Length: 453
Image 1 (cartoon, rainbow, N blue to C red):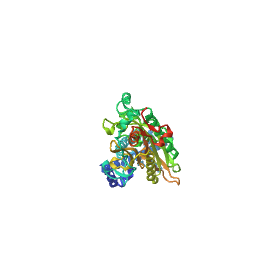
Image 2: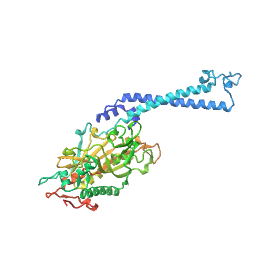
Image 3: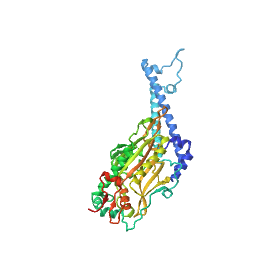
Image 4: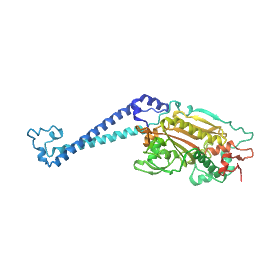
């Protein structure tokens, strides 16, 4: 969620940043709504103050043993000046304080209802706004993505190269037919050497990150609405997850996590951390459950796109002044893993329209797939600044005192495996139809060479 104070003080800056994404937000309308909300809040606070004062006056009269007749009798004498309280002078029937209190309660109820209505409209507008892209993020859609660097040489085969689907089927690594039979299109089964290679990748990634100081977390796969809201997926993108339980109005009360980021950025929801704890670094392994899936086109076949895939995720909670450096550290971690597998790849800075709505800047690490003549993303490295922390109420208390501040949250795939297997098969294939397995994976049970039994 964006900082309301920033919108109030710099609406032109916010408008221009959103337009880099292709988003035109009616900020003047929001500012008018925000003014109405603040006025309504002030009215409610004033009426609550009046109610407290009247309640205290009624209680004082009761303690003095005064009756309604006593309260209506005219006050005479030098020590009993005429009343000037409008709640008492305007109401001459029954107990004027009680009647005035009832009228005040009715006004307060109406004012609170108006405040609730305005607060909901205001929050709905804020919930729909994406994060502001960083100044160095190019405007526009994916056509404006910028290649930062390319690492290694593309493999040049002196023999007829095979695509990853053909290799996986011939080597008995992935059973697509039975995966579809079990769960429908967009699903597969890793078997034999394929399952061993998949598990070796996961073990290698987790071990590497743990040795670098990341705390290993195994989160639940079923999450509540607030986790999706904090991550920035709800309410706008609620239709993109697998919902297992809905509440009032169809709200997704429980859903299958689309990525471990959704769980990890909510791990400290509602907490105020100690600055000396930062940065907090977490690594998690989970399957990821997505509604999107591939079709029959070459670019979508095999394990490139599916309803369930495995991923190791990295998340950091950092101080605002440290988050830019933290993003580069996460990027270096993802690149190091890809390079360690001997894969030709590149790093791309995404244009604003291609960055996830909750993020300010994203770098993609992409591996080369010879059969497609294209790159496929295996890691997205993103910085959300305070957007997710503001939605989740995650702050930290400065070590030298002062007001608490929102943390910055960052995430990176470290890595997703469903596109690494195709890249390993295609880039490391041999003339005889076998595939050389990267040495880093062999200590985790992967064979030296993938070959038919």
